[in-house]
Amino acid sequence: MSTEARIVCAAIRAKDGSLLLGLRHYSHDMHLQIAARTDGQKFLHRHGNDQGFVDQRGQYYTRAQAWRVACKNNQIIRTIPGSEGKLYSENLY
Image 1: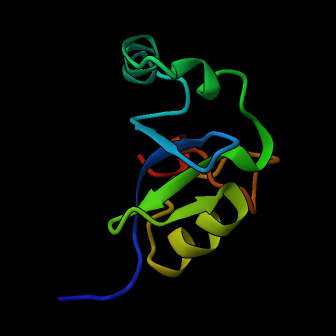
Image 2: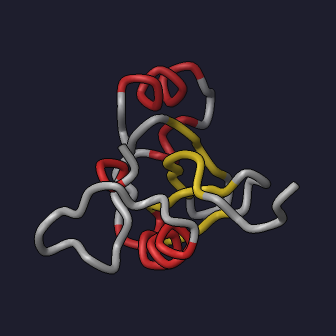
């Protein structure tokens, strides 16, 4: 079994460090979670280093950090012009 980190899904990080996980940043599933949580507002309008990804262990990575992990593991299947060096969900599928 590999111990290498692998990017598994998008994440939004609140100011307090808590994470909201989903298919894509602010996708329908994330909006449902935000609406269902009593503290959901803290995940709205997060950008920059607070939009990232998590690995299979729940470790948070910024877009730039996640790009390096995904490249190392050959997870990048599509590039987006102008976004090299920062991971987007579209890079993974």
